[in-house]
Structures are given as C-alpha cells and as structure tokens.
Image (cartoon, rainbow, N blue to C red; front, side, top):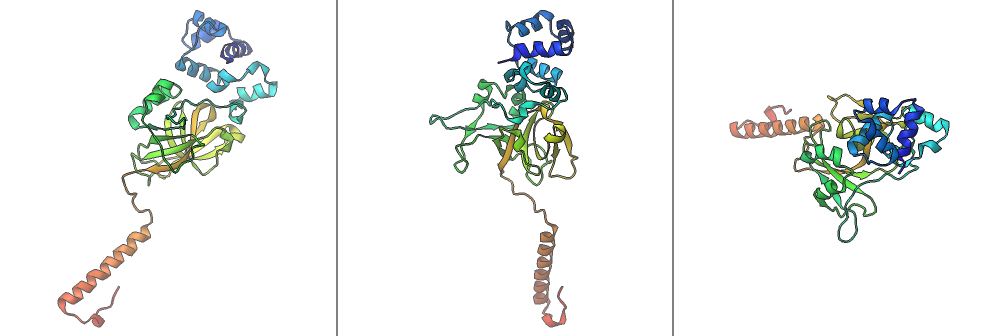
Length: 274
C-alpha cells in the first residue's frame, strides 16, 4: 500500500504544509503526521476525504505509487482523469463465498443501501447481507443484486431486484447499456450509461423514464460499476405500446356490438360494423 507516501508526495507537490491540509480536512496536524508516517491507519471516511481533496480515487491513493508516475500521467491525475480506470491494477471487491468456495450473489435491499455507501469495503457488513445463487448465471463472474427504488427506470417496476455483473475495467463500459453505478454523492443508481471517459473522464446517466433529465458524474466519484444482467419483480409491467390498447378497445367494441345485435334481434347486415 502506498497511501502514506502518496499523501505526503501530493501534499508537497501542491506546496501545502501539514497545517494547511489538516485544517482543510478538519484533522489535527499530529493525526495527519501519523498518516504520513504510517503510524496511524485511516478509516473509510478519512480515505474519502483525502480522495476528494486530491481529486483521485481511493484505489489510486492506496495501490499506485504516484511518485513513480511520469509528469504526463501526473498531469492526467491533476486534471481529474484517474489513471486507475485504465485497468492496470485490480479493483478490490469485498465478497462472500459458499461452502463450495463459489461466489454468492449478495442482496442489497433498500433499507441496506445507506449502510452500503460506507460499508461496501467492510467484510463484516458484506458478510451480513442476504445471499443466494441463480443457476443460470456463470459461476466464473461476480454478481450482486440491488433493490430498485422509484420510477426513474419505468417500465421496470419500483421495488424490483436488479442484478449486475461486476465491471473490473471501466474502459469496457458500453454506451447505451444499463449499469448499476455506486457513486460517492448519489449512492446506488440504476441508469443507462453514455461512456465519455476518454474525452472528459465522465459518464452521462440516463433514465428510461423521460420525465427524468440525464446528468453527468465524474469517474472519480464512482466506487463500483455493475453491468445490468436481469431483474426480478412480482409486478407485471404496464404495456408501453398504445397500439395494443387501441386494438383491444376496438375488439371489445366489436364484441359489444355483436351482443347488442343479438339482444335486440337486428339483422347483422343492417348495421355497419366499426
């Protein structure tokens, strides 16, 4: 891990003193000194604070020796384009396995989403989530299921269980496909994605429901990405094609007309059908 050397390197590169950084992050100078010297270990909230201050992902701060990067790579980082998304390092995902050593699918219900935003990397929290298996999914891949809240992805019903496949290399995100995105500010969202990482390091997130406007997120705000696989719901989605409703209404009108003709004894040839 390179956290201690990285924060010291980045602080000096910015020309900041320990007092400057400690004041900005609401820390004691002695606490910051402990982090830089490896005497103290930061919690997840502190890691998030350093990530925001230096504008780079926690993964990069922990696993990339930033002092060994070229000036051009450092420039990319400082412009907000995190080199870690290039997939040169493995993303660490906290997960659970069954007695057969095969991956489980952890279930994140709506009531657990708030805890997930801080406990996603905590083995104890992940280990307490409900888990199950879907026999038609590959045992070579990692999946997780999240409960959908709201109508932004209508006609997928509110309360549906949406399963995603863990995306290791974010360069593989395909524009126009649906993904579950876990961000620092918005938590867990389910959206159709436009991948603009190469141009400006951002993703544009779209809802299926046109009432909701698309919006951008910078990749440094993103913690996890899961590619949509399927959803499970006890509700049958409403029909989305109005033509079907029209055809059904016309058929019902014809049946009513036939019954009316039979009841009043009118010759069928005397009434023009619809």
